[in-house]
Picture 1 (cartoon, rainbow, N blue to C red):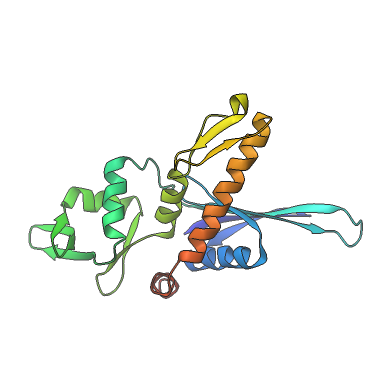
Picture 2: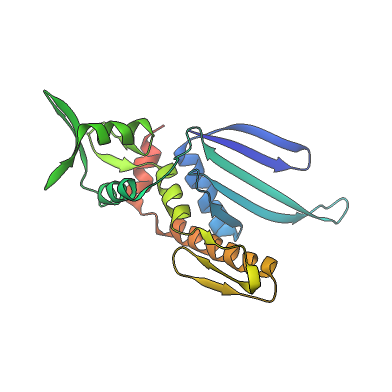
Length: 203
């Protein structure tokens, strides 16, 4: 589950959101051209502007969704395990002496399996199939696109290798922000029907 905060003219409204609701919000944002960005906690922020018909002023609107349990530090070992699971053939195997995430060619040890489940980075469906949660996928995306540097001397870099240069540090930061918004949009566009169906079937 996610915590959802909607910022509007009357202030903030707070509630909860399922994975399927988060996916719906992000797909709608993609279709409408809203700015959205994955966060390292495993959530996302969506921003757009609209014209107030009463005052004719341009006002900012936003929706922020954050997982109830932030994904935390995604070190190399954890990212490697999640990448292996994301291939799509992972299953939850219950043996007399251990519970593991298993593949055709091996398995994740019991302690690591328990840790991934406790951190809500993976879920198991009714057929025993294992998939990454939406929070895990958003957290991985944000981790892969961290900003290195604050635009000092008009230059900064994304951890993916993308570089930005501009006249001011603020302008550099904005270039990288647009880059992160772009890759977030590409991520939403790339979500396939199988993963979307798995999310939708889990209420």
